[in-house]
Each structure stands twice: as C-alpha cells, then as structure tokens.
Length: 77
Image (cartoon, rainbow, N blue to C red; front, side):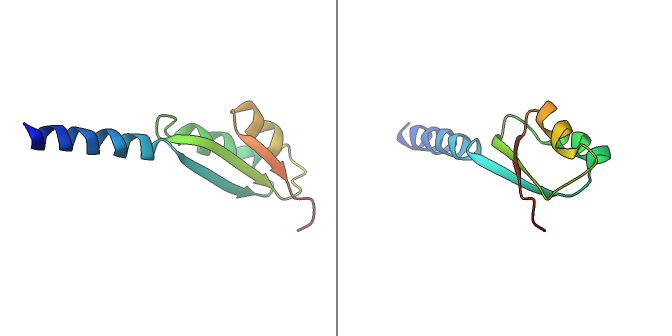
C-alpha cells in the first residue's frame, strides 16, 4: 500500500510539473501559419504560449493574439 501511495504522489507531482511548461515561439511574417501552430499545442500541458514577433508586417502578432498567445515585439532584427 505504501508503494502505491508513493507512486500516486509521484504521478501527481509529474502532472503538476508538466503543466508549468512555457512555449516561446520566435516569428517573422508567419501570419499564414502561426494560427495553425498555436492550435496544435496541447493546452492541458502548457502554461503560457509566448510569441516573439520580430517586426512582422503581415499581421502575425494579431493572429497570435487572437489565438490566445502572449505576444512580445522585438522591432530590431
């Protein structure tokens, strides 16, 4: 019984650790694909999705925000 409790405790810890993953995606003019990429990321295992836009001129940042990502902008390449 003690071993089962320890295994259960370990599984709970692993699940909690797995849900604290942050994903950072650097992008430049990826408006056509960033939405598809963001939708493929499993929400149950990722805490934050951060998109670092490198001065895109095609609306990449807007699409990423609409998909729920945190968007930061780096205007200098």
